[in-house]
Amino acid sequence: MSLVSERAAVAADIPFVDLTAQQAEIMPEIEPLVLELLRSGAFIGGAAVMEFERAYAASVGVKHCVGVANGTDALQLALRASGIGPGDEVIVPANTFIATAEAVSLTGAMPVLVDVDPVHLLIDPDAVAAAVTARTRAIIPVHLYGQVAAVEALEPIAECAGALIIEDAAQAQGATRHGRGAGSLGAIAGTSFYPGKNLGAAGDAGAVTTDDEELADRVRLIGGHGSRAKYEHETVGTNSRLDALQAVVLKAKLERLSGWNEARRAAAVRYGELLAGTAVGVPESMPGNVDVWHLYVVRVQNRAKAIEALAGAGIGTGIHYPTPVHLTEAYRSLGHERGAFPVAERAAEEILSLPMFPHLTAAQQERVAEVLLGAVG
Ligand SMILES: *Cc1c(COP(=O)(O)O)cnc(C)c1O
Image 1: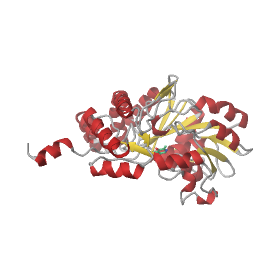
Image 2: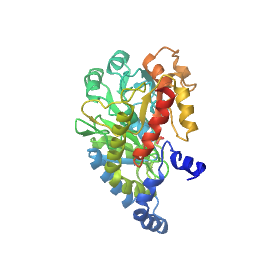
Image 3: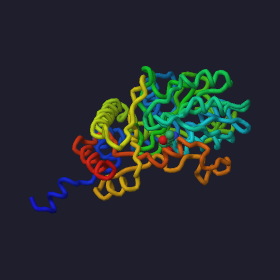
């Protein structure tokens, strides 16, 4: 082998996420269905959407699923259907994708940020209890990185405050806590099927899940221009629906989700073994959880050096998220200074997301660990 091809064989690029293998798995199944749908012209609603909604509700373990246009809408509609709007406060973790807070702002309510716990970086129940006011109407635990938040610890706080628990389940499709699905643990939940999520569409999509028929009905009403019968509008709604084409893709992927999540868990175990006892801090599941590792987030002291070494070896990484919500320009108006949420702020400087996707191979993981440890070990 020449030096050049040897190098290429050893050091083929390892992407942060690779969706092509997932797509290849479902292509034979969806191709005829997509073509049939395109020929039929029935693009909105219809059997494909209903079938997916039924299947997704069953997979989460709830009675109702309403498909919507994206995850941000899912959260916004869950909030609006719960009667939340101007003058209300909704408690949200500072370490999350900004969409969690945006969904609150879009209803006219105010996001009240709180810090996260230092181990899992999930919403801190003590911080939630301290942030409750007379205006608190909801608490949004985010099942970040595919780890289910301890929703049961928020229940007494929510009950005492007369607030609802609304889950952000966008990163946790298929995850469970004490045997119950993420998205079934609160009053209502929003999830996202953005292509990179564990269950991803071929574009934007999302869903609301709940056991509450009235809430599900209101989500559908608001997402359909406030109308049950054509041109009879009983409330000012919006347009947020799941496209039939996305439902076809999602249904095919949902059938494979548990296998793909199993592969992610195996990869997480392997990373744990490869990085055990080193300077790299590895994540661990909370007892009672079956997590789905949407992201595999380690902690390192010299992150810039790690990223540089990994990038130099053709290995993709991410940071989720580099700026806690309160330090973004968008939410400067909330008035929090640096230091307001020290756990989230410190995490933002140390966290590093390693390549993680169902088709990641053991050899690829060994290479990631080798390069990472070479830089910071
Ligand atoms: C992806 C994501 C969302 C928003 O979903 P979109 O479909 O992109 O609107 C909300 N919350 C979290 C935690 C997410 O990761």
